[in-house]
Length: 182
Image (cartoon, rainbow, N blue to C red; front, top):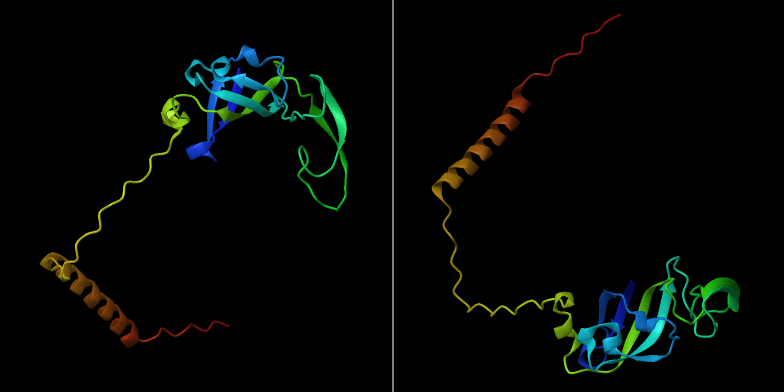
């Protein structure tokens, strides 16, 4: 079972569609190979997809320049497989996976090279976010102040009255003198 990410082109450029599939046609293919869409999923009939990347169950990325299927420790500089850029010119030995897809891979990245009859947004409608509908602008009406209910006015007056009473009582109350104990 592979987690497959498909990068779209054309009107949907910048959008990625995800699916999980048991695509046995991908086994033995290399990074950069072009495959038919129906090999991945029957709904992708007419599509041509290029394998752009992959990673295994431990998270090790597959690199184009590493032949085979196993893990290798290669010396990398800034770029694919290594993101750190400090200090300048640094190289690091990192573990990567070979460029041939096996059952050890969990995630496979594909890019659309040729579109099929249906756009990807119609094939995967559950992954398309609905655009918020534009609300028509309300017509300008003269501003009318809504009348407050008499109950609310009465409640507000009571609160104000209680506040002023508590303030006035606190001012008039004599302060208690502290008891002096020796």
